[in-house]
Amino acid sequence: MNVEKLLEQEIITYVENLPGWKWDEGKWISKRYRFLNYLTGVSFVSELANYAEQRNHHPFISIDYKVVTIKLSSWNAGGLTSLDMEMARVFDEIYDQFVE
Image 1 (tube, rainbow, N blue to C red):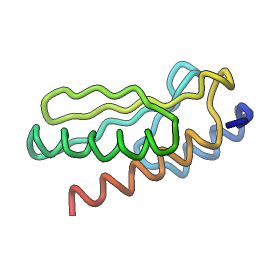
Image 2 (image 1 turned 90 degrees about the vertical axis):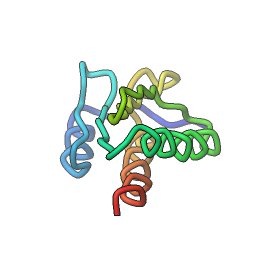
Image 3 (image 1 turned 90 degrees about the horizontal axis):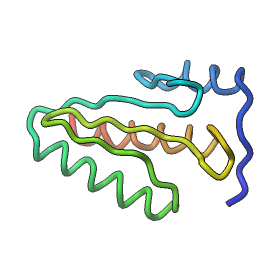
Image 4 (image 1 turned 180 degrees about the vertical axis):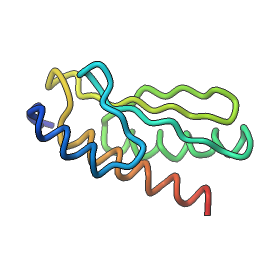
């Protein structure tokens, strides 16, 4: 997978169109997802993990009771890439299935 690092303005544009995502420390984007209970958050993480494995692009995932925090970056590219932004969009779509 040869994906190039995004320029700062490209990152800003992407993040503006990804509600709730933040550009942290110039290294990654992150988002906190909230759930009604712990097990729903764990199920959400399982779905994300399966998708990430299919794409061979793995996020940092933290589960803190009813809050799941995701961080994305492309280490091979040395920063954020279009793949990270695509993954963020898909993670939001997966989340929508859990909160409907």
